Length: 323
Image (tube, rainbow, N blue to C red; front, side, top):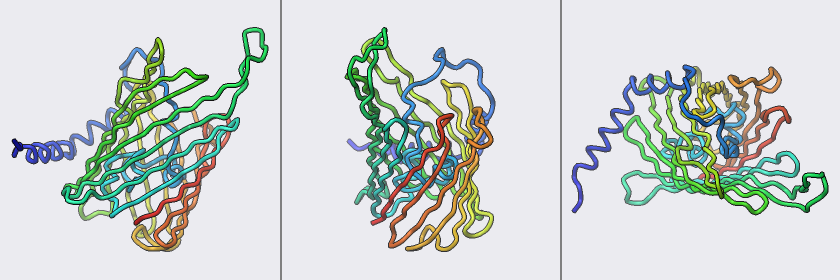
């Protein structure tokens, strides 16, 4: 029998999570250095930290409050709720030693589902053939490695609020040894009435970790809080703080976007982007990100250049199409 109390319970949950004290509590957790939360020294599944969208990557990965559409699955699943009838995206970046990172996503508005949007994503980091060496440095043949995740997300708007979640299946393989696991992402966004601004909260990679033959690696569990503000038309500011729970550090991101012409709702446009990240030992040169985006016939082509540790910079390109 259908439970008539379910909508009221869901609305009540959204109401409680959207209160200012809820955002403040999450922000304090993100900003204040924590004591020992876990016995794990650091997490695995590093590919889950990689930017999947060139637009967000150009703004130093600041997307907790501004990510929208199918690209929001990797930043704040609540952003899926802003999607129109349908949307698709594909993203690629070339990495080191022949490695490549790719992301594919598609989403639709579910008919007759009261405004729910659904998204499906595939995220993969693949390494080229690598040369194996034995204990005495002799060649033992080549091997391959990859990490990948498949995600299914749902999101919906409730007035000024948006809520969403994603379930992910994760698989990792190196030299034929495979591990797998699952994770959940949760998110909420709120548009501030009367002000061109919004706030967002997200929890990413909540799960038991990846199980290999005799060990289990923890996932990079993180809690993010962000704010997006448009002081003037066409100019957007993003500020994010992301706490990596098991790794015990907080990363900060400041991103900007300036629309030379056009708007997010227009069929064509050109935007320049830049960002600054800090909080985990980045050098002055390695803390800056940059990029640009072109919109034509409701399709977006975005480019980003961002630092990836001491090995240099990575360039990303993303193509998105709204239907």
